[in-house]
Length: 440
Image 1 (cartoon, helix red, strand yellow):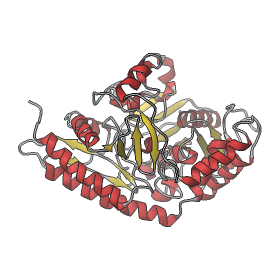
Image 2 (cartoon, one colour):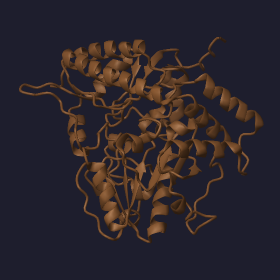
Image 3 (cartoon, one colour):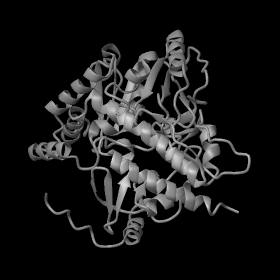
Image 4 (cartoon, rainbow, N blue to C red):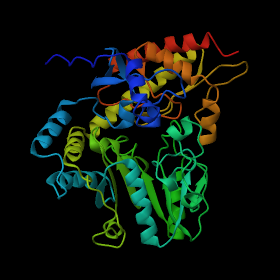
């Protein structure tokens, strides 16, 4: 194996200050900021499997994994080989390519009920395009979505969003006109929803993973399916995180509920920018050039991204998913135990290989920390203030989790039992450190 490349010269602080001179806030996405946990973000120089290295040469066990995009870990040989081979033939064409056909076939083969797929360049594009298609197909304007779910940064979907919006304490965004959200209704997750005949679609994360991890309550997704059927609305699953992470068929196979439209991202690009939305053939037939709903993108179906995504899907089996879920469940139980034993309250819910991480200071009379069922519950736990010091205590021990309390953990195929045991050890020490110095 070749020697790893020499990191770029400079410290994390120097690179961040340099970035601040030319990039707003020094980051190209707010979730990368350390604003909610304070401190200076490290600048990544390279990754290998479950590890990421900063410009100072420090190594961290990475449970962020590009917020779920890297199912196989950093720089997986099959993925890098596929990208290299694709790049050698051309990086973009503006014409149809075999790669987009092959990846679309792979997605449709794996997701029950998904018959056609249109590629875009991000998860945001996927959700905004799916909503446009739903409105065009139904002739209606109103969209129902759930507080704490995040569906990208398009104007109409930012209200009540989770992820970085929640981390920064924003209700939405300045610059979004009232008219853009006038037809968006935000309702609590895991509660019954009353629809009427003016609703075009219900947009939902089938497993909420942008308000930390909140599992759907028994019957919740089924109730959405029934309500949509009763009122002629379309059900849209935002599977940018859950798609090909929960298993080969995503949330549909996991929950047994099929939406009308799916939105995908992250895993299907193998670490490169991509998104997709799909559904039944007759519904996707409403898109131009076959139908009247316009959607386009110069880099949609990019040959490098489709090659990387196909390499990922080709290198995981149903047994791999089962093994990963089993490993994640055991890790979740161990992680919760050592954090509690260290003196903090904790909950580490697991849905397949997706894990939440809730921590709070212990007080007299406090019982076990129960995983929340909605955004309000997640906010109450985050308000304890324990996450930020716990994050830094982990970071000092060589473990990196997301710099905000509303994201999830992404153990993947590259995280073996040895690596997860190192995380558990670090978490126990971090909890004891943080619990020993509670806020006044």
